[in-house]
Image (cartoon, rainbow, N blue to C red):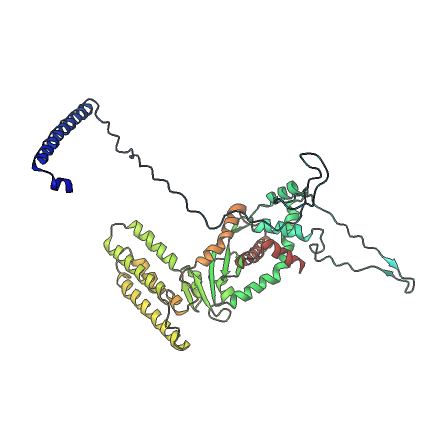
Length: 452
């Protein structure tokens, strides 16, 4: 730039002429290229793709994957057996003069044994006492290795029971399994007797689960269909976060609810969480109705009336009330317990009043939301109990999740044949579900049950 500023006038004029001539050459070359392009476009027009064909996406630039902090591979197990391999001779010269062996590397092989069944015969001998002149027979206690007075061992009984309940295997498949993998022939009748014997052994623990349910602060209840000898019945489920009690009854009426939790607080003094099924109305204690069921019905109603502005506005306001109630974190923890309880009760009444004001205009009005509004008004004292008690949830998902195992088992097996079979099913499922809720190994717990 400094040369142009200090260059003589004549050199600058000559530079301008050269640049002007170069620009003219470039413009003529550009015009020629454009003409060639237009000629090709006219002779070979582009074929437009159909509207249903998606345009090709430009391939994304591949980026190098971020290195993981730890390798997600199976960690080495604690070996149950070690086999050492060492060379006896040099692979180069063949000499046996080798030094002390050191570990080069290790390799683990994870496997399971496939072994035939075993039969242990206990021979009990009697002896003659030369002093008392009586026969002496030792008392042999085999309760830790055999199922009652039968010949079935504890490991076999626990395995069959676990396969039947946790894996939901039909009796025929259990029969095939023990024959295929262990060479043991069992009839389906023998398997049923084993299950009944285990259930009889577990009956005291099963009864204790009911006592724990009645002594809990919050219980989730639900019911599902069942079949006994081709006749419809019902499995009733009562559960907490770590306990499940299942029972089979022919009735789906309120008498079953009264049998377990009573009508007031004579049997159960906590909060009962259920859906809106009428049989639960007999319980007059603290009761939380499931908001998930209520919102599900609201969603179905909205799907049936998609173009209904008043309904959409009503749905939006109901959900807003529920979301605000769910977001309530409770009163100031520094307050005394009595004032905290009073604050929660006041907050519960506040949300009840808001929902009442929203639903009461539609109760006697011919509108799509009149039925659900009437339900909200009817069960209003039971919709916001989760605000009054901090350990109560607004939904009944606990009961829905725990009873799913029973529902799937019913679809696989079709049901039971006798009242004893239904009781066995209820006892075993209650215990196995409880062990699962408590993160315990069901097979090991079943073995402990049979050896206790």
